[in-house]
Image (cartoon, rainbow, N blue to C red; front, side):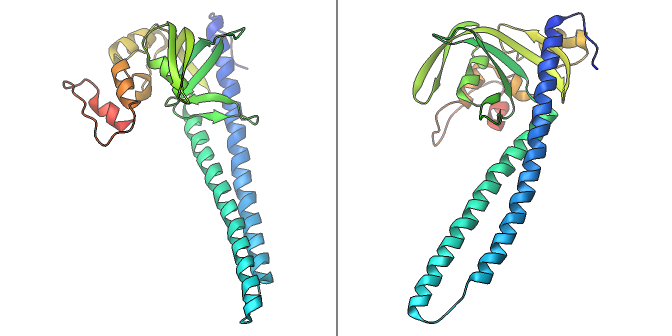
Length: 245
């Protein structure tokens, strides 16, 4: 059992991290098992289909054979699509197991009774009810984290502007299922020296590049796709960081 600290917020966040990590571990196990089961089923179906397939030179039978081949192709394509989806989700689960998320925002949506906590990570993940318990940092709602201002703000999703009230921006220093430090800020900290200073009492600093994107960098990263985009900036201003995103 993990010892309680003198900070109830830290303890609450550690419990949330532990729960999230357990979810990710379960998802990884289930995806591995599903991929193995699907592969075995696909191989068995392939053998059965080819055993049942009869090639014949008779014109009528040839048409029937072509129809059977087309049906087989659709079945195989279904297996391939399922495997691709599950393989990608497994990749994201394994990525997030190293560091589930790096930030949290608390948003009050119009007409909602209570604010909503959104945890932001290097990738997104959904539970069995297809609800996001980790949001990809590139998703529209994550933009409010980089907007550099608490209070009323907005983001665009599906062609609409969503108005929200950003009540909390919290950054984390964590690894796997262990929380090292957290701190609340009114801006997304981009200065590594300041970041280290804020977290040094807990002996670590955040290192993920996506946690330190400045507002201007965020604007460039989320710019609509164009054939060419010119970015001006002095040495050390973050041009390469933008490119890597």
